[in-house]
Amino acid sequence: MFSLIQILGSSAPNLDILDIGAMIEGAPRYASIYDPDDNNLTLVEPNKKEANNLKKIFSKNIRILEEYLGDGNSWQYYTTQYPGCSSLYEPDPEMINQFQSIGTEPNSNFSVIDKSTVQTVRLDNLLPSVAADLIKIDVQGAELVILDNAKKILRDTCVIETEVEFVQLYKKQPLFGDLQVFLKVMGFSFHKFIDVGSRCFRPMSFHDNQFSGMSQMLWADAIFVRDFSRFDNYTNDQLLKTAFIMHDVYSSFDFTYRLLNEFDSRNDTRYTHSYMKKLLLNQPLPRFMLNFKETI
Image (cartoon, rainbow, N blue to C red; front, side, top):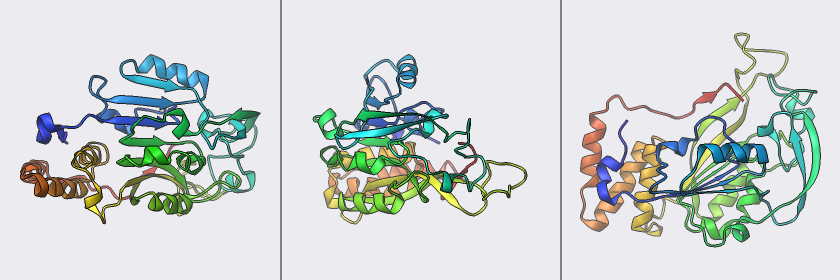
């Protein structure tokens, strides 16, 4: 698939990207739009080993902050066997141990190997003057408390990619519905799910694959965009930035077209004509609704 840069040319916007919980688990989705010469990337990763790995991979126009984000108060931090499951919230064995491939038993991914008291920092205090056109956040249940303390940054954010849970894998953690209500108040609309995680209830397994799910959705990455019921709330710059992100990163071609159409109507440009012509050359278009991820 082509990049929207081929349509926008010199009008293609530079982007500020903020990755919270930046532990490397494969290439991030925004890798397709990250250009170290044109974009600014801020990575927040409190795990020192993982932060050092990030420093080896990224170099230019980058900041790596080894901070625990939260509400500015002290929290208990639960370090788990698999670092990617560590959280400000305590894993809940009664829920987790109902499902295949995840568990809190010794040497399992959610097994707590250390507890420590950490001082959290409010994102608005840590980065008071930083813009974030795209926020990617994956912090194992603490997404809401972090975003609730990032309201200044959210005022200008175009797209949010956040991990969400549908069941409480961590005790007292907020769930997808809680996050959706908050972001709606902040002026965002839910767009779609990506990488939906599902597992079979124990002891059943599907095709002898413990990573395969059958019916119960457990987690996903949720994509939120600025409220599209009011395009007059988008600046011209936000229209192009959102279109660039939604096309190149999330393959949301219909929404990209709608954004470009709004820009054309304001500026007497013909981006939608060029965009549709280019899309028609790339038939059949990939059509993503829900894709299930079978790894942890």
